[in-house]
Amino acid sequence: MLHTLPMGPLGANCYVWENGREALAIDASDAAKVLAFLNSRHLSLTHLVLTHRHFDHLAGAAQLQKETGCRVLIHPSDADGLRSAKAAHAAMMQGAFTPCEPSDLLENGDTVEAAGLRLSVLHTPGHTAGGITLVSDENRFAFTGDTVFYEGVGRTDLPTGDVRELMRSLERILVLPPSYVLYPGHGEPTTVDHESVFNPLLQYRSHAWFN
Image (cartoon, rainbow, N blue to C red; front, side, top):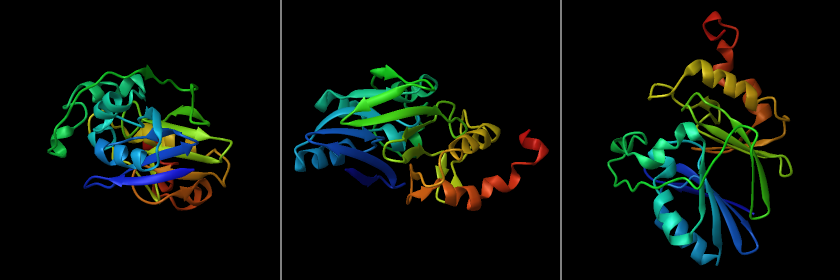
């Protein structure tokens, strides 16, 4: 069972996958909100997977690691976001930042298995250098972080952003089967089929600047 918990002033989505008494979370900026949800459903959080380095997606990691003992996973290119307020752009949110160390580093092609869910890791840089997308072929969905939104993409003007890389990452996601649901870091879900037609970045895919 998948739950969506929007968090913070930017409405960053935290996704919680529930299976029996275990849970896996994707991104979490508000540890207190996640803990309250877990307690209300008597769940034990085993893994927190972070799609990228930005504060509005990982600010709750340190407290969740401390309170639940969960494993915290992130791509090595974005691991500094867990260690450094500057790397996480925490000043943009004007919130307290507590650093922590990742439990595991995820590379392209790795697999995460927890709470009965198997996720394949795609390295999808562009919004950040270490952005990842997490694909469940069994459930026909993917968590895209801030790489792909409903008819949109993540910004590329912050450090380690790169619009050419983002284009390549978008195309990599859109080769998934058309019916796959995409759960983004902000906003409502979409599908591969919808974004293949309506995502505005695709209008520029043939431009020489991207090649």
